[in-house]
Length: 128
Image (cartoon, rainbow, N blue to C red; front, side, top):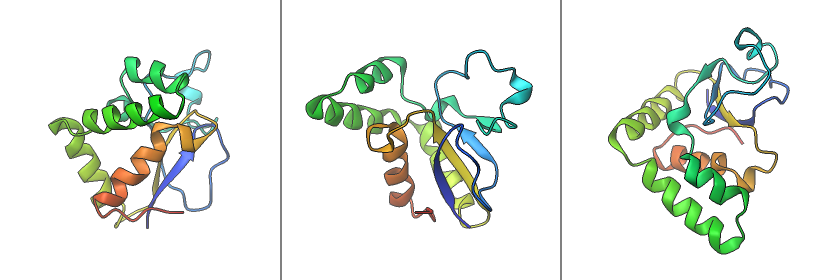
């Protein structure tokens, strides 16, 4: 049992379980009824996505700006409502498999790399 950190749209792994899309906006031009069949996500959790301001910062980030993004995104994830969702998902990772993801190609420059750290800090079982 574990939380899998994935790129939305990639082929689903064995035993991955349901996917949670941690993106600010749903995919353009894709009917809602096809999100799951196109390996995007089963459930949309936009509250785990960075704010629009931070998304813009991340897309143009050099090393210094990336560090600013990480610090500010972590601050957004500390709000009580969001923190409780992260805690719930961390606890759930010990009971079942599921995935969280984003569209970004490079996880190292995506908020999902920070989510991976946040889950580990909460004691979640995180798949490698």
